[in-house]
Structures are given as structure tokens and as C-alpha cells.
Length: 491
Image (cartoon, rainbow, N blue to C red; front, side):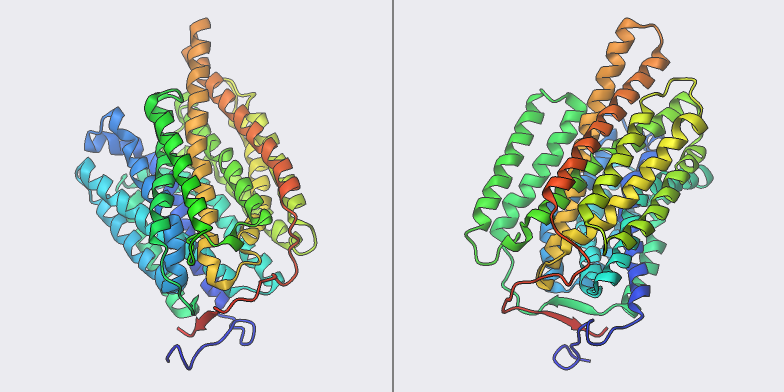
């Protein structure tokens, strides 16, 4: 089959196999999201095995997040031009190889090199996954179901990572939290090859490498600034310089994009409804993501749970997500997404607020479980609509970069969350300890302050969704006429 003779569109020749393809793409996305938290549970074992110092421990996380965040926009554009299916397969192969190398690491240097490669291939894999869903499912009702599945994966990925990390670290070794990516990637790749068609922008205007430089440098500087804030505080010179440089570079990038013929971030992507969805996703990630970490600390350090038991404790949250995404995806075609997202964010905020009541004697069933259920349901309602909005109305030729913006929002929110809430928790713990003798309760006090801030962030996100998002789903997405089209090619 050739591209010239075998082009076809999803609307004229629907292929039932695409639902199996969706499962494969969702599995690829799950691998990325899980990797953000699965390594956290294994860090103590990694530190002991590779003799990593406390000062160097954060590099295991940062080595992944910096290239991932910095290369997302470029990765999205590459997938548009190279082909989303091809980009996804390259990303899966590279991510799997880097994961195996990381699992076999015998030194910190080997592990960090593997984590950098994981981040780089992840930056290609993530936007390709979401853009394939957007370009494959164009019927409004099917989009709702498809993004419901994909949203469930995104929302449940972090707690699943904690569960899987606990199981693998306890039953096997820390090496398997990285090795596990290889069989997952293989299964996903086979499904993508068999069940999905290639799609790409038929007319390619070239890569905006000049714009890619400030965009990549700016995103890296922002994430690095948040990382330094976690280590050195918000007033440290390195923190201030990094964040300021990131803001300036991103501002220069946006100014330059308005003046080039082949922008890395096309103007139609910068739409109020999509911008509101990106902002809400960033704020949402700046809430629950940190709470997962602090509740993990609470269960292991205060309640003395094992890594495996801690992971299993997050299972109700995951189940709550799975139940809610089904409801959210069905509502998307009849209820304005801002109301669905607003309700979900408020439920998440209530769940977070309940966690501020914890003390050293709190039981899991009464202190943590109700919050997990509310947070899971809330996040499950938000993400399907946010995912659909992120690519709704986007020309197929720009689906990759629109998908990349969603992932940028996720990464920025998660990085801000880690920096901000760690600072709040550390300061709260120190202040409480100075006035009280109990070191255990001082830790819990710090965790409570951090989850209180997380609840506040979600409370800010709820009105942001109501005010900024005016798009109505359930109709054919409007696209402006454009000379370039999107080719859908048989596998």
C-alpha cells in the first residue's frame, strides 16, 4: 500500500479495530504516567543499592522531568509531520530501551543517563498518543467514550504507579520498576501496528527550530527553578534566576511565534477554551499530585506501612477514578464541560480538605479512605473533558502540538506542586517542632498544611473552569479552512 493510493478518512470508512488501537495507545500513555510515581516508591532501595547521597537523590527524578518537559512541544510537532503512529512506535522503542538500561544500572551515572533518554523519548511518545486519539475518533459520541478511557488512564496512572512500585519493589527489586516498561511497551507497540492507521500533516511547512530553542530552554528553566525551590527555597538565587529566565524565554518564544510562517505553536492552538483547559489541568496537577506523595509519607513513616501495603492503600482512589470517567464521558455530549470540570474540582477540593484533619493516631479507614474516594471521583470527572477540549476544533495537522500543550500543562503543574507543597510542608513541620516536642505530630502537621494548600489550589481551579471554558462539546468540532490536510494512511 502506498500513501498516494491508500488514503482514507475515519469518517468515510470507520474501522472497528480502532477501539483495540485505543487500548494500545492508552497502555502507552499509562506507561508514561505510571513512570512519574513508580520510581518514588523505589527510591529508598535505589539509594541503598547505588550508594546515592541525599543531595544526589533528586537527580533520579529531575533527569527525567527536564528533557520530558523541555522537548514536549518539539515532540508534538515532530509527530504531526513524521506521522503520529510512527512517532509513537519510535517513542515506545526508545522508552523501553532506556528503561531496560536504567534497570540494569550499576551506578548513578548509568541510571541518570537512562532517565534522560526516558524523558526525551517520553516527550515524543506522549503527544503522539493523545493526538492519535483525537484524529482517530472524530464522532462526538465516540470522542466522549475514547477520551473517557484515556482520561481514566491519565488520572489513575499516578496511584497505579504507587501500587505497582510497592508490589515490584517488595516482591522483586527496584530494578523491576524500570524493567516493567519493556513488556508494556511491546504489547502497546503490537497493538498500534495492527489496529491503527498512520496519520500526519500532508503539507509540511518545516520545523520551527528557531522557536524550539527558547521554548525548550524556557520550559527547562521553569522546571529547574521549581526543582531548586524544593531544595534551596523560593528565595534562593538559583531559584529566582531560573524562574525569571524561564518566563523571559517563554515570552520571547510567544513573541517570535507571531512572526514566523511555520510556528511551533500555531495561533489556532492559543484559543480561550483550550487555554482554560490547559490552565485547569496545570492547577489540578498542582493539587492531588503532591497529596499522593504526602499521604505515601504518612502511611509509611507515621503508620509504618510497607511499600506494598502503601501502594494497595491507593487502590480505592484508582477505582474512584475508573467509575467517574465513565460518568464524565457520558455527560460530555449533553452537559457543558465547564460544569463537569467545576463539579469534579470541587469534589477533589473537599477530599483534600478532609485530609487536613489527620493526626498521628488517625486510622486509614476513617482518615484517608473517604478523601481518596472523593479525590478519585473528582479527578475522574475532570480529565475526560479536559482531554477532549485540548484538541477540540484543532485542525488535524496541528493535533500533535495541541496534545503536547496538554502534557506541558500536566508537567508544569506537577513540578510547581512538588516545589510549592514540599516547601509548605517543610516550613510547617519546622514551625510546629519549634513550639512542640512531638516530632511525629510535627511531620503530620506539615503534611496537613500541604494538603490544605492543595485543596485551595483546586478551589481556585473550579471557578477558572467555569469562567474561562466556554466551549460546548457534542458537536462536530469547527475547523477553519486551510490548504493543508491530514492524511490517514492504512497500516
